[in-house]
Image (cartoon, rainbow, N blue to C red; front, side, top):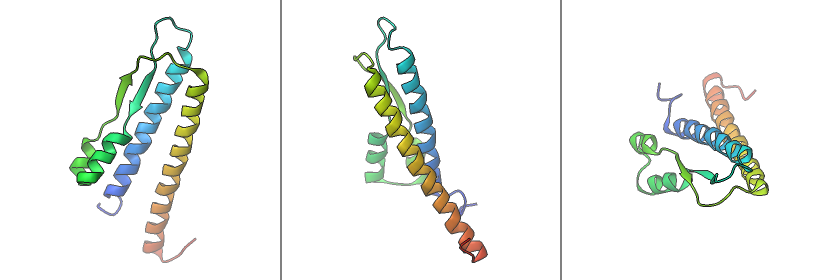
Length: 115
């Protein structure tokens, strides 16, 4: 059903998946801070999404955007990883609110009630 499975909802769902992956990668970085030779991993997503959104926001274009795990040449730093976790958590809350608002609008449209 297009109403429930629209492009906006798909994009928000993809963002939630990416933020979940980013939290796992950040946790891995934290747990390996003292591991000799370990290099920081990061998840890139937003730049690829920005490129796609500037050209086309079709279903195929949105589906083609995939997160990429990149190994950097840096050693992980605890303070930086904690900031990354906090930033990702804020992004998760923002996406959750957007999804909730989207479904509340649909409910209002269907039932005619705001509560």
